Length: 544
Image (cartoon, rainbow, N blue to C red):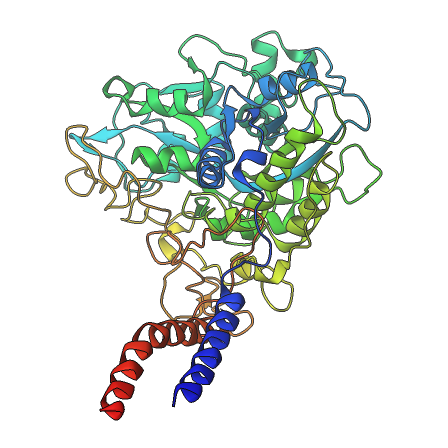
């Protein structure tokens, strides 16, 4: 009996160890916490909400990432001066600036661009009718340009009324709020105006004495009646204050949503007013032209003309990517030891971090840019290069066919978003309740300046099983058997966020082999604990 017990025990021990070995270690172990040297970055406030979330996530692995969101221009400057280890910028280095500023002169072969997150630049506003907040404002690009060039100065101007049939806006001064610092948000906004509304923008440049340098600019030329604030947070903060009544400013979508304030839906070339949900941005950036020349200093940078003129009804015209500027040689304060940390951090947000993009009110990168980004990470001095199985990144843009699933399953806008129709009754941005009615007597999500839905997501998908339908053609659109609900519910938040090790990809959900091995391991351990006493009692009885 004793020999049988011992054989059984050895069997259970072996079974338990085998099972535990199968599940105890991830495919790629993170390095010990004390091997990560702290690193510092600076730059974009447009991307800062995403960067801050990612760097908080990796704290649990012993990584200490500091980031100063002082604007894209400052980030690029600090990178060139060698005072930070990486920069984040919404535009590339300005080696030939069109705004009259001094050229930036990065050393060739010292840096590389890597898109890190997509999103939309929006027009957050603060406007009430009879004490109730307007949440369903719509603006065409021409009107937006007139607002920010002071061609119109009152909310009841006829050109605004034309975008909003039936919405009786108040006779109140418009207060444009712009960036005071060198900003990628400003550069993206002014580039869009210079491209799509050139005559209005050129006339404004002439008026403020910038006629010879009137293209994209990182520094907005201000005139009387405007307010200038530092950072997206500064712009959003001014608009959200009680004294911000009548104000409108441009920020990344996440700032408006986090503040609980609405954004203007912008008219696209299909004749629909849209906002930058994760799905709309994914649709829009299918038209972005990416530099795919690996020998180019601007490899992986974007050209957005096709985004501006896209005729897909779901397009949001001011969609774009933000870049991390990576060091690809030791320079300034950057060393190979720091490269180990930067590489692990980069692997994290190029895979796991993208799963969080929609929850953070951005849009995840498509598979081609994730693949390219993983290759860029290998160029960081000191990086511990990893072979990531990209299929396990669980990025909502990835489909088995290689197409952008998030874009293909994006729902089309409602009929009330069509130009010429009365505005939809639902709000936008961070104000997701009912919109103001024509008379201003109903709707609105707030009263007396108290906001609601401060962290509510974008409109997202329907979350149901109804296919996406083109409102003009009636055509049902689906991809790979997916429905229009996509990956999100109406609140715009993702169903599951998988946080894994900084260089480990998340696996699929559900019961699988790993769970089976864990169960067997548990049974084996339980048996090891209980069987000795049971067998001892049995042997004692037989010996009597």
